[in-house]
Image 1 (spheres, rainbow, N blue to C red):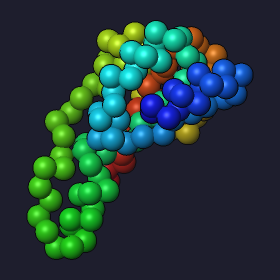
Image 2: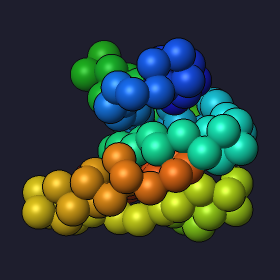
Image 3: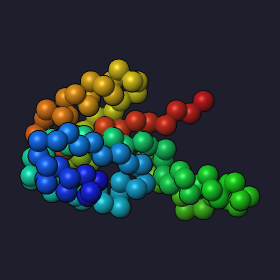
Length: 119
């Protein structure tokens, strides 16, 4: 997300979309305040798998018991709003298209959470 903020600030006429996982986002989530203050129309698409999914998968593949990789549920759209941005969830491709279109036109960051499918 910080790189996307820098790219959007440097080239305001270009469309920029940030992609992140829920665990990775939380390392720099405070930067939502910067994007909100600058009123950057920046969609931030977050894939939510409840923690550090890649690390969890690597641990499992090695035969290790996954440890310290599951995060408690966080209402990320509400967190985005708390920082002065917008937040929503997209559970289908159509919802994602709609959320992205709105986010690219809206002043300030928009966090779009895509929950991991569990089935």
